[in-house]
Image 1 (cartoon, rainbow, N blue to C red):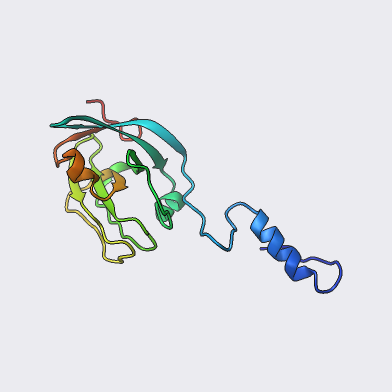
Image 2 (cartoon, rainbow, N blue to C red):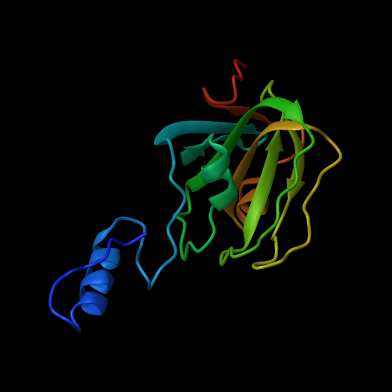
Length: 165
């Protein structure tokens, strides 16, 4: 809510617009990005081709998880977003308002990859719901899974997942 301006007539609209644009996350031009708890280097996926390293944004709050990578126009090749839920449960994602095609890697609390959705369709409302429960999901650029040879059964190491392998 923007406070009312009690100055000269005709100035209230300009004042309200200037105030809204000055507030973080209130830009009329761009929707806000997910608020991440931290950008953390150090997520590794152990594959047959060797360890693959990523820098990840970790999201653990429901609000940040709901926002995810919506509206993002780019993602570095070695970057991703890690959704850390804390317990193995069925997970369902969609691509609403997501510009980038993504690969989604579903991870059990032991760090084992239990499902992969490759080349997801931007803006799709179709649920992506693997059969296996997961405690975390890693989203990376589409094509990353194939390029790096990431497979079901590979292991992920990151403190938010709790994998010790």
